Image 1 (cartoon, rainbow, N blue to C red):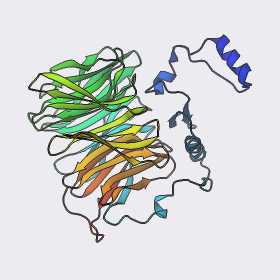
Image 2: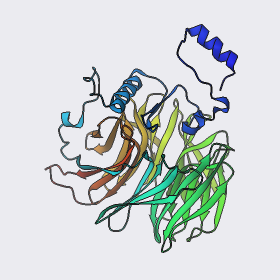
Image 3: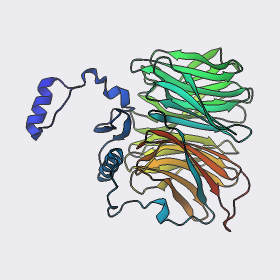
Image 4: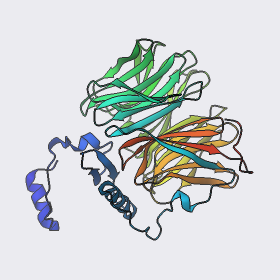
Length: 439
């Protein structure tokens, strides 16, 4: 990005002798970057598929990169260093907590599994939207008695970024971003009797960080980031997805990254998101009485609020899981009449990216997330937060998405080392070690 003379001066000043390539206009950087954080490490395998995306630098991040290189080259992993996180086999199953029942590969054809999103239909079957990076398209994998059926939903114009899938009253639908830096658009695909129908919702370099939800009338709502204007926006559609209205929710600064949308019982939207300019976690909520968006800062202590995931409890009060980039921790914020309460969920190493939050009625929050090159799950136990390492083979667990049903959890995620889409199935045990009843 820098001019040649500045690159030469920098190399001479620090004695750099390795090959350096310029990236005019940040064209290559923009293909992989969600924020302007550097340094950024991108590891490609022999087939030029992305094996690892890592931002910033810490000693733990360096160990993650080394593990990814060894895994990509097919080498045995080095013995664990002091302070390294143990594998799941080294930890006993948590009494009264979650245990892994099965891990399976859903799709391994090419470099697949980016931006996964999962939802369950009325029969409890999993539907997963994701990006096929090799083909530059949006795909959906759906579970059936015969196994996994994979549909190519949209292969036009580099589609499938930031996907969000939901099973609405009339079937499955996906919101996502299609295009490149500077000329992208927000799209919506829904499955009908004629197959997948694709609609353009908004244009003009918009549509990153999408989150989809349906109201009781079957009308879709999508929160998303307007990349060009750096605003948080919301789109409301007709039940058939053919007519859309869009509005700006927050335009104060560089706002709207990592959106997560939830609707209350009356269909009023709430959106959690990251304020990149102020480095704050924010929440916007529609007030039907005042007919305005009420916006508040949830956490402003440090660089906080990336990878948000929002849920509303039975009373309609919001809970937000998010990444504290300053401390590299997973956090949870809860709203009550007294204000926001913030707690650290996991602080072991670098944890909390790609969080996905769900609530078990009467039992509290459950969160899947990426941390220390592994897939993890956290839940609130009787004595505080507990964590389980779900998968740790190579570098796994990016782009997690969590769904709960009948005392079980299903997590879709990206196996970075193998560039595959995977699913982990877990069961919640009661204090006696038997599967817990209830949702």
